[in-house]
Amino acid sequence: MDLNNTKAQMRKGVLEYCILLVIDGKPLYASDIIDELSRSKMIVVEGTLYPLLTRLKNDGLLAYKWEESTQGPPRKYYELTDEGRFFLNEMGASWDELVEAVQMIKEHK
Image 1 (tube, one colour):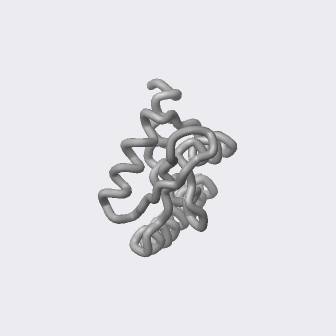
Image 2: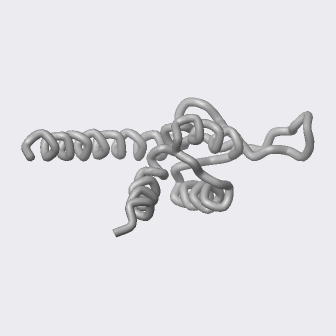
C-alpha cells in the first residue's frame, strides 16, 4: 500500500471543509485561500482549488464579488453565503464526531 496516496486521499476528503473554514468571516481572493491553506500545511494548487470553488458556488455555499485591483485586472473574492455558513457548522459537528470516534478507537487498541 502506498502511504503517500493514502495521505493524499485523506487530505482530499477534508479539503472542502478546510476551504470553507478559511473563507469563513472574510472575503478572500483565490491566492489568499491557497496561502492560508499552505500555512497550515494543506498544500493546494490552483488546478485543484478553482474547480472546488466553482462547485461550492454552484451548490450555493459560496458567492463571489469582483473588486478592482491596483496590480492588474479585477479580482474575484469568495465569501460564504448564509447557506454556506449553515453547511460549515454542520460539517464542523460531523468533523468533531469523526475526530472523537477515531480518538476513542486509538485509545482502546
